[in-house]
Image (cartoon, rainbow, N blue to C red; front, side, top):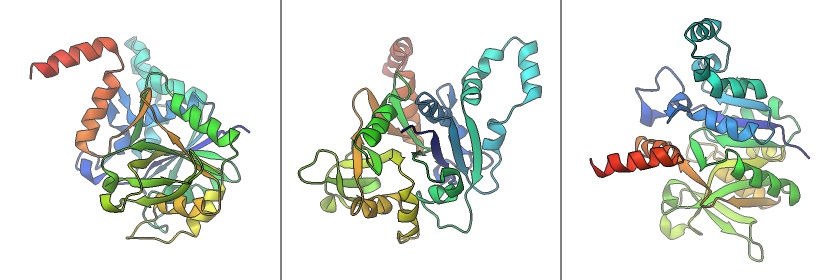
Amino acid sequence: MKIKKAVIAAGGWSTRFLPTVKTYAKVLIPIFDQPQIQYLCRELIDNGINQIAIVHRHGEKSLRQHFAPNQELNTYLANKNKQASMDSLNYLLKKATFTLIPQSNSLPYGNGTPILSCKSFISQDPFIYMYGDDLIIEKKPGSFLAKAINTFISQKADAVAAIQPTDRVDLYSSVKIKAGTTNQIETVIEKPQPKDAFSKLAVIGRFVFSPKIIKVLQDTTVARGELWLTDALNNMAQTHKVLVQPTDKDSYWHTTGDPLNFLKSNLAIAFLDPKLKKELQVYIRNL
């Protein structure tokens, strides 16, 4: 089995970044030296995934413009001998086909909804699902995702969810691993109070799914005004094989969903370069 498709969720308003993102998608804000979404696309492409759907908010045009050719810009860069400044994007455009899909206003709000918006794109194929504001910090792009894909295929799973320990399960989720197994989800709950948490293991924004998740999502009840992917994962785990893939010190999760974590993510990416890390550490010590 080969996985060739992926869906990236980039359809929210990112209200914690307003007014900055009033006119363009938050995933286009650069993390260090390139738009955040390009790190996600690089993970996918380096794992052989060449059909990428990006779900954007209704009426939003900046993502479509970003992934479309711009001949005027190309001519300008050629005249100035600055073509290399577009290398990171051109690499992606050569390796994959990008489908831009608006999130339907007729669907419920929630982080499970982008998958329903992509039913036709997904069809009957397994696929990767990513939250647009979640980064995996790693020296070799796609290393963690390769492990998750291998787990999905080798263990004949219906879903694999990435997990990482956190002290703030109340902001994310809490996973209970089934007794007698090392990586099968028994239960997962969205944003529990610490006293109600099963563990400090939280689901993060990397998933490998069979197309069965579509029916599960369609049957999942909207709760607190949202269609939660966590609720669908919990429902799926009761009747299907839903596994976890933990991050580690070489590939770890970082959210960029709020300004402070966005700033930390910039530093985490920059620190992958030993020279930059040294310079930044000196700068920070002198503040």
